[in-house]
Length: 297
Image (cartoon, rainbow, N blue to C red; front, side, top):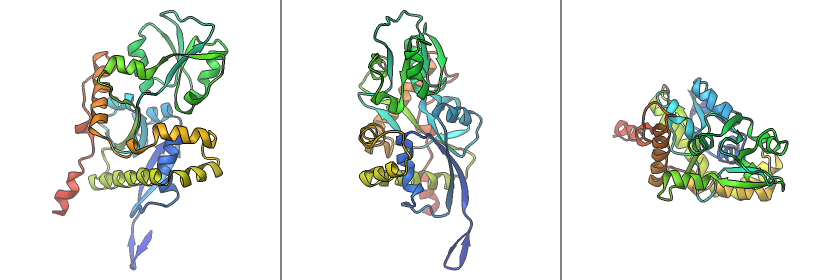
């Protein structure tokens, strides 16, 4: 219980899961370190790799969960999309890598980071004949080096540095541009919120998380130093700065109309190629924030 002016306020417990990747940790840390006023919300936070979180969302395990955008149409009946804590690529993104001495045939064997990841969706549309195995993204580079597979798609911090025996066969950004056109940003990941939460709580959760991402970006240097000192990230300070500039920046604070258009294109492509049973769009699946305006008017 929290006490305000002698009145007891019952804290509302919200289960939240994010990935252990530097961008997710950075965007959530303003809440973790108490830099945002959570009012009557108390987050029970946990972390896991993105495919584990995708699978957890399919089972409805968390109130709020980080997901791959490529998963969302499969859970849209149970979860709404949050407008904040989003990661898009703009001229960059996951990389399809191979050994330098390997020529890829149409049915090459490839390691992907999870069936429901956005990179897997785009890859499967572009390379329908490839033979796919799924691995934790941290194991993909070694799987290619050991010749367990012919190629692999690197994601997260792995794109910043990999073995000299490997080279980039294709940038998924380029694949996305071929598929989507219009120079749209590449949708990668965001967060979803359980629809069964009371709407006022859902709106307050989104507001708090938006504030956290904004505060984190406004105090990037200080927060990055704190993450490094506490060994909360897997990269050194130089790579952390580069990685955050890519995936946790001002474009991560709140969905723009261009980003919404990109999500609609991703959902359309998934539907067109048979990965989703029905076509959805982004806007109707966002939390209706105007409810609070009506309620307070």
